[in-house]
Image (cartoon, rainbow, N blue to C red; front, side):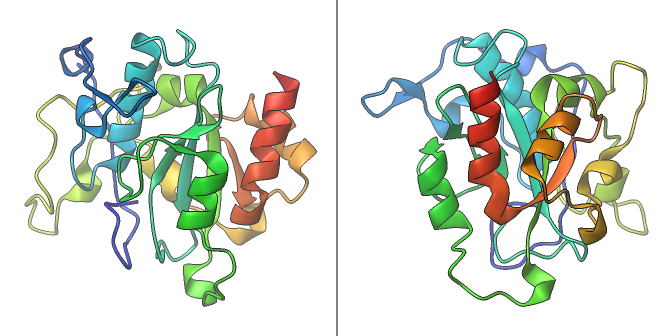
Length: 225
């Protein structure tokens, strides 16, 4: 995953001592008094870390459950890690999408986001067909880790400058598992949304679904909550 552009190659990562990055005074946008994009920590090309901090910030601000129980992280990629458009998604209790790497309004209702981002009426080459990895945020916050080595070239130089905070380490001490979140295979996609919902709350790396399933899947999760 990467910052939004025409074609990206699915990169990103995360950090450990993050409390200093979670200031409590949000600036607000619009009449809904929701925090503006600028209220959140964002490092270009480190989308997974941005999402990690975003989940924590939404909980801290009281816009999500204190334990992030009503948030879901969505990785968008495919087997070739090539996308017509990329982004990070999250859903709060009102089915809003909080995508720091989108040029759309922030946040955006789920239906609007899907129609504007996926544009499912477009016929995409198989290379660009999207697979979504949906992860319950509390599980993601416990298990995600990245030492950022995937953001260095063969000479050890940074492909893009890293965040200023330390890399995120998982609760179990794991230092790097980002590839497990980014790697996606069409054969692993769960086509039955009821089965996907059952696996969502027990799988460290969430479940894989097709993009066309997202709205129905979120509706099912809301109905079960």
